[in-house]
Image (tube, rainbow, N blue to C red; front, top):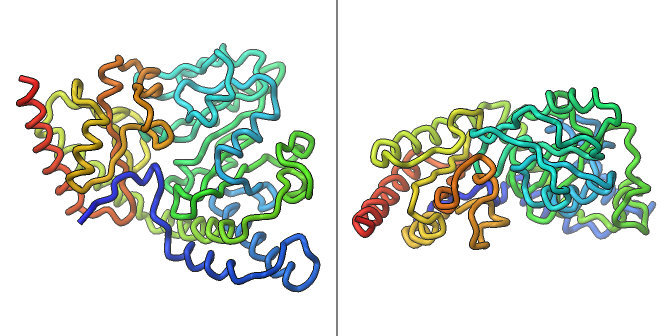
Length: 366
């Protein structure tokens, strides 16, 4: 029986999301139409907007549905000519940045220096890193930005934190927040940009024409995906309230303790910082991450050698390089990301299999 341990890449679809999507597929109306069928479709969109807003703590009108966080990042980046990201951002944000980067320390936490942001229009600091799980405190960065002569916008990528932590817009200091459905049990291909009240995005819209989303993102809405996103967000809020992610953190800690007992050279990245409850980035120097991924896949376990968007590329993690790891170490990393349904048995089975593969690697390397 296979064990899925790559939830930071994509989570399995929640039953609530599936049910909402199936119901939405039966609606014939266009949300822009004023007849009864159109109004019914529009009601589904607006209900989902309320559900997503409830999880992040914003007003529903501040939620702009997009095709995913990548499009949301592009829309936010369009607000300025100079985007200054941290060195550990996801490529969807990093690709919009100039040469300047905000630095991080050895744990992957922003070092507090905003010198690189001078003259920037948008400054980006993620809420949680997809590869290491390391959490950032974004409010201190926002406060420094507010004190700058030409105040830049603050962009926070909350894709991984959304639904796994009690991340809220009010305490983030963000002007723009990126979120995505498939990281919390919703469908793939739907996300949202959360916009601070008073910021007018319409003149910077990337998709124009029909005027949907108050002119901020034109195009007929993907009703089933939006419905699934909303249902997943509501279910995620209930899981947070029930403390289910604290239980996941216990499983992650069990995993790391078990592996540490048999692998003295193995590094658990970011362990000294606050992390997502489900994420473990593991470096065993000299044992290539992509090799581990293939070996564990054959053994029945799905893991990653970095973020899913870059794991297919043969290069060391830029995130780990920014944290001070050398090329060999960075290329030897794997990411194990647990889900709400990951069991103690799953963890121990993985640890047993991984340990056996490690011993074989050590024998060959001797």
